[in-house]
Image (cartoon, rainbow, N blue to C red; front, top):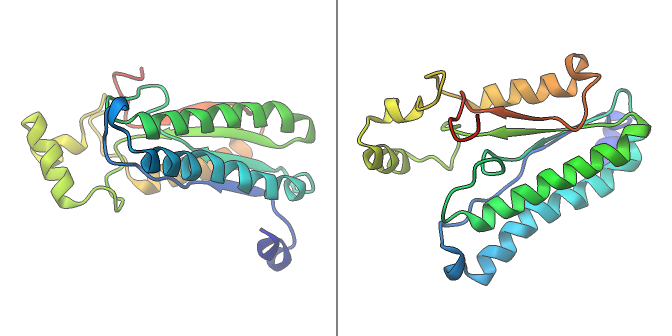
Length: 186
């Protein structure tokens, strides 16, 4: 953070996107190291980053924090407790941050992406396996949402940039899905 501030003269925007998705395990089977890693990466690392950034954001121009959380916050799935709990905690942390930082003019908003298949998490093998589970082709699986569209990482990035910009200048504490419309979330 200090290197960024030295190089660019300040800090106005933080788009916070880090996470790990542990192997699916039922609650009674979650390995302690998987639970601990999920909390460390998916929750604690964000708090530590914000702690470093907030003093500089207080001096920023129209400062904004955009948090990339997960569809698993409003619609968790079985076997994803370690991930879902950490991302829900992250979302709650963002809500508290919106309350605490609003008087300084720092906006904090959350994105809940889902079905973003152009990332390293979604290998061709994983996509084939998931599509087969639903008895559909990979292309059909990728567009299994209300809008029948594929969501890309650039779609998530575009919305994150919009949330950091003037279009959302009067918004804080918001949570927005970017998923093509998930029937479990709607």
